[in-house]
Image (cartoon, rainbow, N blue to C red; front, side, top):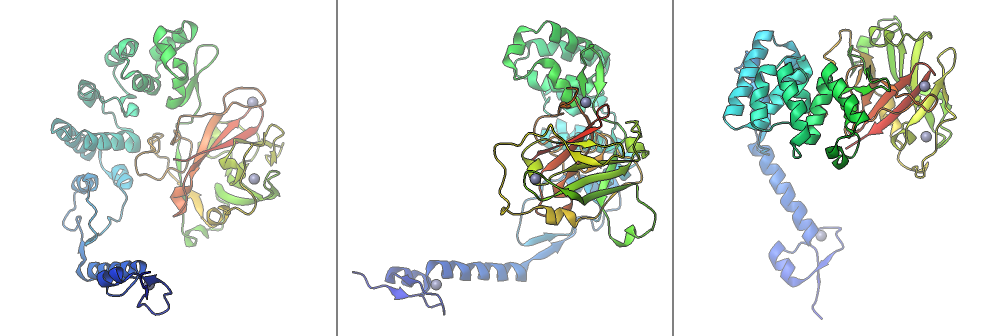
Length: 430
Ligand SMILES: [Zn+2]
Ligand SMILES: [Zn+2]
Ligand SMILES: [Zn+2]
């Protein structure tokens, strides 16, 4: 038997082989690795440089270009962040500066940097709702159909070409149908209706009927063959606020994430009122609700596992719906409670609207929480059917847990059927 020797670290009870001791200077492997880690850390702290890439820049176009540059992680460099986020800069630039960014995207495209170009184009389209149709032929040339939202404003001749292409282009059909849903004009609606009445042969290869793609563009093909809107184009951001700013004394238009008095019948935790907003606020007025405030409640825990419906009484108080169906699996009461973090977040509604496409591309880096606008689908578009009247429910807003909770993730989407005064929440995460 080989004799084992104790690790030299005081209090460490491990014993090691002499060969290990020879390599590590008498320490066990975990202790040795910890020492090495500390040495590395000390070296990094001693040699780390602070780099401010924005130091000498005043032009916002130059600042955006730097923001778009891929940055290799280097532990020895600490980058000074710019005081504004990328999307804040995009919103603040002039039309002329946006034009410069568009030309820069074309330069990148011509140089073969498709990803870089695509990020800029997406930013211009989503954050600013800019018209980039002049660049689309270049994307088509390169078969760049992946970011379907970029094509939403294509001129009719390109739309016609895409409507033909979807019939023969097996490789790109999925993206082309998504593009058509974003275009969603009368010609597309007519074509979707024709495909619904006479399903084409190629539709057999799809997971859903072609007309179901409309959901990705925020509308559905109604049974009468017309386009029915599922979203509102008036979009207001929901953002974290400092408590100081919130002491104005007047009743705010909207509260978020209030703990409800009622309990979830499934897990017995308190329900959460995700939003409680004045129904005359521009972001909700289009719904024509006869109640003063719209409250959307759900269970933060069980809502991650199933759609949760709430019925609004004549005063707008949400009541657990009889239509809720308990899923087979729910986490136990002892499982970690996520609601504590969310409840501490202080959120308020932006005073000015933003682009309805602001958060439509989930893969970009913006904050997603908002009332109105297009949802940031993490997975496929999913508008629940009203359990009462079977009509597809309309999107009223979303809360992205990552926006206000460092460890949070996943988005709660909120919907309503105004006829039955029934709300729904559903949850998606990556
Ligand atoms: Zn040890
Ligand atoms: Zn629950
Ligand atoms: Zn209904």
